[in-house]
Length: 455
Image 1 (cartoon, rainbow, N blue to C red):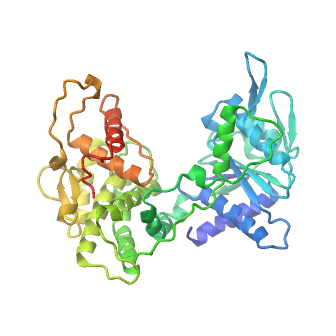
Image 2: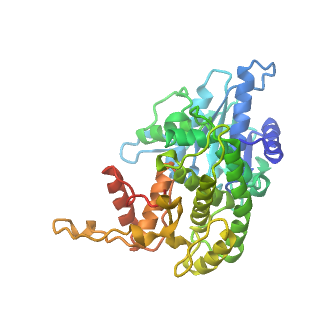
Image 3: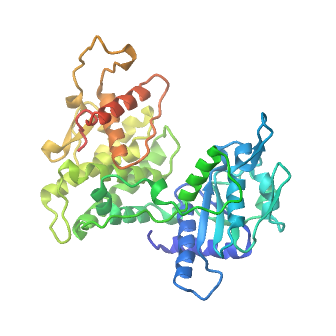
């Protein structure tokens, strides 16, 4: 995390609001730093207690996260089995029950990370008022500890929240423009050597586990799995591998590329292009950074200078082309078909002199990185394999590769190589499933996306 003044202000505001309200809502768009602010405050309180701070308000703090809109009401608060009339605890009730049963002085935050609406949050009104009481459908009442527990909600807006719920909570607004994309890129650059050292990030569910909470009764199997995920979402820092850092000159050069090109691209996409899927700026910049991480991995054969090693001219040129490719796909990969021409013209003009796209037919999406030419651009057509018909192959397993299938496969493999989730959007029947299955088969055989093509 980068300790920028706006971010620290939000952490302090969250701390002060927790001191006076039992329920707090972090309101703001995706990418504004809501989760990071809660994680920073939780970690600070825990570190202060472990350091022996005299203030008893600073205690080891656990955070239990659940998405209330990902499950049904009965799975959230509990319900009777219609066949056996047996009561089964829900996810939220199990987490709250476990936190209440904890006899230690540790503090517990129950985080509801999802939209707030009257469908599920009305049952929380008795929790958020002075009673601090969770009333379950079976008539049971769970009294929450107003000193050791807090309810935290992360929402993008309160458009469908009722006044009864809003009036019971403290509000901390976290606008995305306060944080911006630069702190993320700086943190990503700081961790790039470690990411390249492991090649693939650790499993977050295994790495972020925060211990078993005491429970007074055994929940159902499905609830147990959800509780396991909630325990893993305690936002503890991901473990890093000690790796030799890259040179300051390299980091400054990569940061200069982001500073020079990201804002103009974002502005053009927002003003002159339409997106196929709704996105925020930090999402686009994150995609660009992760693609850059994948294509500059040491396994691709591009040597990056360490410590005080100089940044060679040929490496500088290669990085410029890699960045241009990643910026085009990371920031412009979400524009719809009608906006391709406008984005193509702008990208060519913007990167002219830095990473020159070949002239002629085709857009900037029709060219790939060619490691054999120091990562200069070449046509995707060179990678399209010749179709070989196999009579014994099932009809629905036959895939005739085209430029589109090849470039989407390479982009998808790059995302998978850095554990970055990928979303393929498009109409039914365009080949999304076929591309994914073909790539998975190639990866299972130890191959890649048609020999790579992206570095």
